Image 1: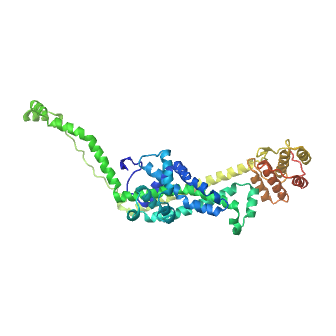
Image 2: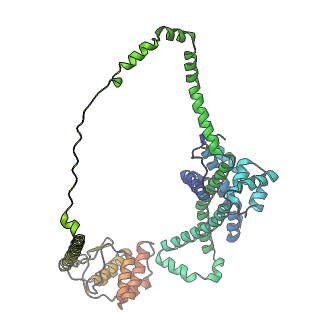
Image 3: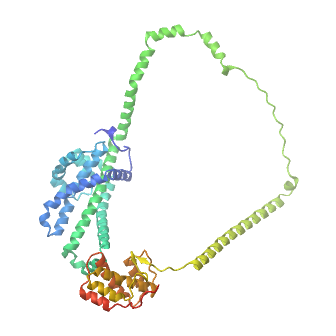
Length: 478
């Protein structure tokens, strides 16, 4: 361990500053640390593959053994701190040791230890065991023990929160029909009997653990480095080493100068060239700085200011006039501010009236890339859609019905559908109108979404029912 090669400023820090420095180290090598975590955890999936029918045992073993990934992250951060970026060959050699080193102590006995962020660094980096390990932990824990316990708690809460967030985002990205089917089948009492929910939760927990563990390990390593800095005075040692390097660099120069000064030839030359004291004094006195210069200045006469007899005689009148002046100034400023406010409000009023007078409502012509103009729709829309369905062009038939319904909502029902709206936006705008045809438009939109995006066309019976229930008889006018 060479302190002069560290890639971070070594100085005594507070506990939370140490945590922040550890997080900075984790951010610097995030992708490498994240890959090492997965490299250590992936063998777990192979070993517990026979337990694929028992998802709860799967997640329990995975959470219990994921500490091997934290060990690989700690190995990368510790080497990187002292200027060494370990090669993948050395990382592969370290991987088996991350699993088997003190397996029963670290993976079973000390797995739930609240001091894991610091104790893991003492155990893996210093290689201490038994009484030496206990005494060393007593010294290291003097600085940052409370923050280490809080980090352990926050990491567990962070995994739960992030896994829940990923779970909810995954559900929101599902199509609405799939969301409805999942919500209808969701039962809190029988939730753990459904393998679909359990495997989705396992995937979310695994992803959350891979992200949280990288920063959790980095924060604990920052606390460990800060504690050793306080105890062992790393900053002082580094300062002395830098001073010694500077002195060693200048030692040869000083030795050469001393040899030159004390050599006999230099003394002989000085004796031959040194002038006498009188000559030296005369030479100094002839310098320009020692010449005497005289300058004359005329001092101006001071004139005493005359006092105003009116003000001095009547100080009360002066104060009264000053107060009147301040009052008039205040009235003027208030009137000026009121005028500015009135002008601003007047301008906004005129602008709003102008916008209202000039505002024109333009009907949407293209919605989601589909034309809904009069020229793009046939006269007998329903008959034309049935002909397309019979000819095998089912998606075009669904598109024609959906375009015709959008045209009716825009022209006849005056729904403010914009050209940038999606299917969900159109559904929401129609639902706000509370029109009797809204239920049909909802069913038509769901059938269109499944056909257009999921390639699941409705059966013949559903298509006939949609055609029979078609309520939009008016043809869109230009």
